Length: 281
Image (tube, rainbow, N blue to C red; front, side):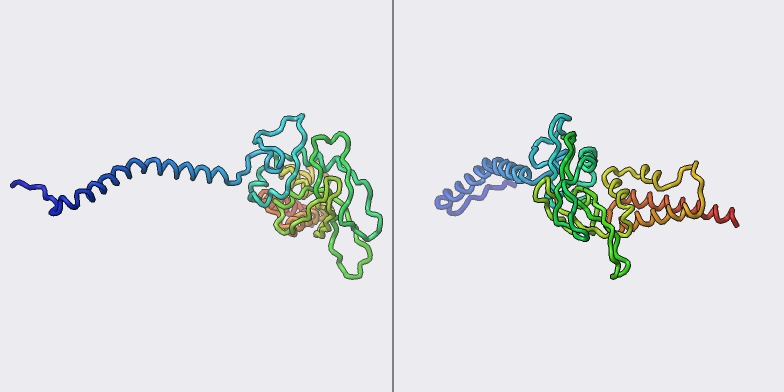
């Protein structure tokens, strides 16, 4: 059986239309590949425009554009807390160790130009000065005025202790802190009143947030094997650990290794206290 190719009844009238359709199908093939190329190029351009943070000093250094850490002779990075709004807090916490030495040097080398003059009055800002040998130190951005909440409304005096700090450390760890005011200059920083359960234990918490050295803090909280232990000394240590935990809870500190360490120390002290009570009974 022979199949004949059917022809268009109006071949003379539609030949031009068929030819145009064939031309469009051929020309579409010519332009399809360049179209895909142009779309891919546009996609790459849009992706490249997205704001990305490098994995080094540029987390807090707006002046630098290189992702390479500065050499020892270069000036210290400039802290830019505003970048916290553009980066996840977890990312910032993971990268803060890159600036640990510079920031701790800034806390150590800072000096107050003048202490608050009026008793019972906290200024909104305080003047600071960095020592001459602090060329690689990152100056603190805020001054915390730490005190304990008044037990009664009629309490006359409140002891306040000033602690310099960096907003990027607090804001990335403490979920209960409000947004802190920005410093007006590097030599005039805001004073932030901070009421916490145990002011005497705050330095240990702040040091940990900078160093993340849980083993060192655990060593400080636990008695040494050579220490003579009694119920009174163990109770003081338990109160100190409870105060440290209370400060972290009040500030909303996010750090699972810290709370795991607190649980270990608390359990060890309780076990030791139970043994002393059992031996004395």
